Amino acid sequence: MYNSYVHSKSSLIFLSRIEKSFFQIYICLMLILFAWTSFSIIRFPFGMDYGEAPLMDQVRRIQNHETVYKASIDEAPYIIANYPPLYTLLVAALNSIFKIQLFQTGRVVSIFFSLISGGIIGLFGYHLTHNKLLGALAAILFWGNPYVLIWSSLARVDMMALAFSLLGLWVLYRSKNSFSWMILAIICFIAAIFTRQTYLLSGPLAGFVLLWHQNHRRALLFIFLIGVTSLLIFGMINAITQGGFYTNIVVANINRYELSRTLLMFKQLFVLWPIILITSIVTIFMMIRLQIQKKDDNPVEMKPEAFLIYGLGFYSIGAVFSALTVGKVGSDVNYFLELISVCAIWCVIGLKLLLDQNKVFKLIFHGLMSIQLIWVFLAGYTLNHATVGARWGELAFYDDLYSQVQEASTRGIVLSDDYLDLVVLSGQSIYYQPFEYGQLYHAGLWDPTEFAEEIKQQIFPLILIGGDTLNKECCWAPPIVNALRTNYQIEAENNVLILTPSK
Image 1: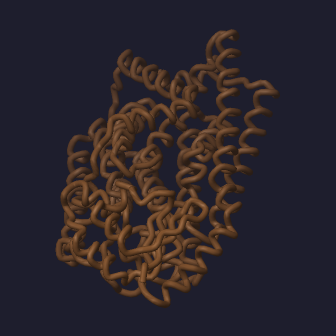
Image 2: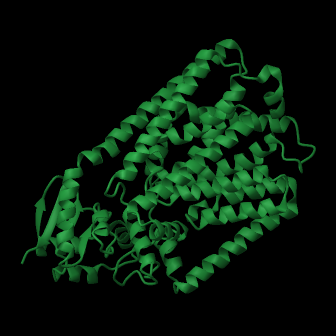
Image 3: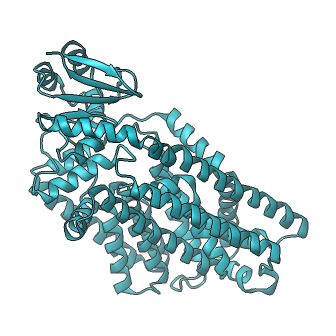
């Protein structure tokens, strides 16, 4: 079975010097690209992503002992906290201690947990293949994925949630049926859940099935403790916020779903990772076939093949279901992070197994994988240049716009959509989150009349709207757009609309 593949002489991978050198050079180049991208994003003085600003605004509200999870979405300020509080609490604490810039604090936290995630993936790769080079390659496949390359350094919750989830899976893999280690895994999974609620699926599912394979009672205890503890924490936070926690992370997160968007996002992932994804799928089917051929006579012992099927396999199922929610309006490539993680592990296992074939197959497969790795590196470099490099190229424009926001903030509240980061950096709290409230309007959960009346009163000295039109259905409801057109002067400048009161 799997062990025979790993330990028999016939299955050992005797990579030629050229093959080893290729992998080693690739790992070094990708590490350089990853470090360069991360350093560039961390240093950038303004926002790199829309989602950073609301989170950093929540961090500041925590530091000022203000409400983050509002019980009513109809009352000003019109803000939504989409995620549980663990990430923002950590960033708030570190920012208060070390006194570094707010956005930079959030980005450093993210890159730290990205390194943890990649390290755990590398450990899985090494222990499941018994090959250090393949273990390092697993980590590099994760860090080098263009989506991860950019997302790792953003001040977002995802990398922290992923790290805790993978850590919980790793603890279960190494636990050797220990009760205390199971408790540690439960703590990790709960930490992931209260960093990002979508991590409720993959980790607990994998843990339950894996433990069920060993001990039914312990599996039931595992899922019971996760469920009860999560509900107690949820109930406590919800009670403290007078129902605001439920309103923000559940009600306000039910956006419309578009199947076409899901198909498009999966197509883009496949274009980036065709050989890696195909190798992962083939490897999974190979392991299922091996498991069917030989049943495990001693389920209590954690054999590698048992973990691959019941642990990593069911984590993969959860990751696929989580990835399918990328079709929800407002979702982004961060919904693929769990899937990317498990595919990086499956791929190196596939390299270990599939290369133990005849010389012709080995040559063809190695050639395809080499092309895939070069393609990923070029795609990552291009994406870095198109996103991070482009932002640095517009630094003078951002400085000028930031000066306008700072000046206007002394006269009143500044509104924006794509430039919410400038509002937060100016020291103001966010008054209106355009995308979140745009979705609430389309869902019939929010009436913008009161907010439109405030706009008619021209109490906002400056409004910045990204793009070249006010008709952005995602963010500005028609009553708000009408109020802006009739009460504000509109000036277009470098793909941004600058609105000032007419009088």
